[in-house]
View 1 (cartoon, rainbow, N blue to C red):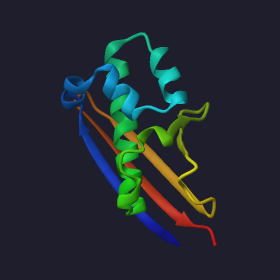
View 2: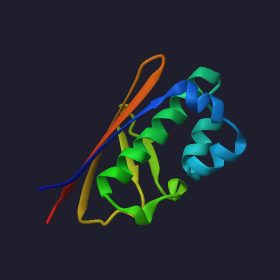
View 3: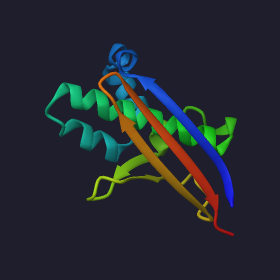
View 4: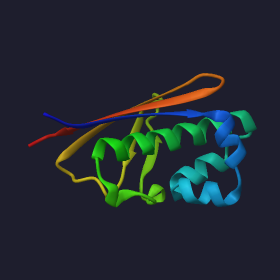
Length: 119
């Protein structure tokens, strides 16, 4: 049964204006930051962090909880070898199955999250 859905769209020019160490440290988990630091192209870095930010916002909307605000670093948006994104976080009840997809254009990133109750 679907427990929640969330969607978020980010304008990459807005993220570019925020792109500094404080923002990066606020948004990215340790695992995400390692991946971010290994991206050689600035435009790809911008797209990456925009996708991560949008996915976390979509997750928080799907969880429908005001208690989770400000905990971006406690959530990791990672990728399988085939490029499929997935979410890892101790904030998410293990009885929930979380699906995430992220899509990019030159100017925007959108993320969509569906949360299923597996019980």
